[in-house]
Image 1 (tube, helix red, strand yellow):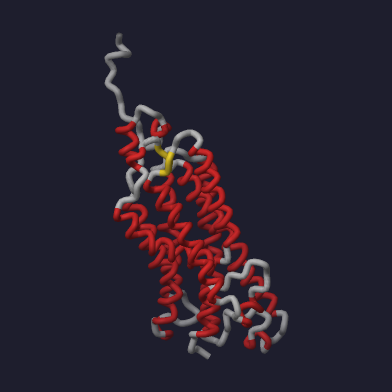
Image 2: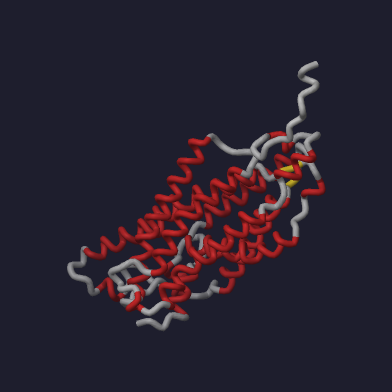
Length: 301
């Protein structure tokens, strides 16, 4: 009797009741489109990540001497602080997650990788003002061939490794892992929640363009495509249970799909570029946008 008189409590955002059949009211609360988070993500990605090297090139050199942090470096520092907070907020709104220890280790690894990249990228962009050409390898650059003693080139190659390989791996693997964890919770039984609102469609283009930049400049196509295939596998698995993607899941799926199309167009456009082909000789040929910039657009010498 006492149990039956208890007031029925709605499920919390972290409750698995979202995937149940009798929790439509709770579903509406937890699966609505997270416009605030996706807007902040898109804004800070464009401003603090894509915009930082542009700021470094546009501002006068005497404002930020080459032996001091530049405006772009401060943008990168802000990115390294704001992005982990947004990722944690995203996970907080997902009804499915991993143990806290896994999330914390992922965030710590993300911050460490992004910080390694901050140092390497800061030095590399300063080298542009000294004649360094991003479309060439470290050892093939004219300014490196004139270094004395020649063993200094090894130090710059180590810096390039920290920047482009170790830093990117520690940065982007946790980033896409957290996005995938969030995606696994973006399923609902309600057909009415499987449509994207106009606000989601408005953010789709800038979101996809940023992921294109992230994948091409970061040279992380393997990480990206593995995440995309894992998302498709989850969709097929959940479909057998009668579950459908909600608006947030559709936003991520459509963003990644559009990113693949942009990457394909980028590859086709630069397919016959012999100089870039020499720098990216592997099976996966995806030139970096900044390498294209220093080869075809850059006016610094």
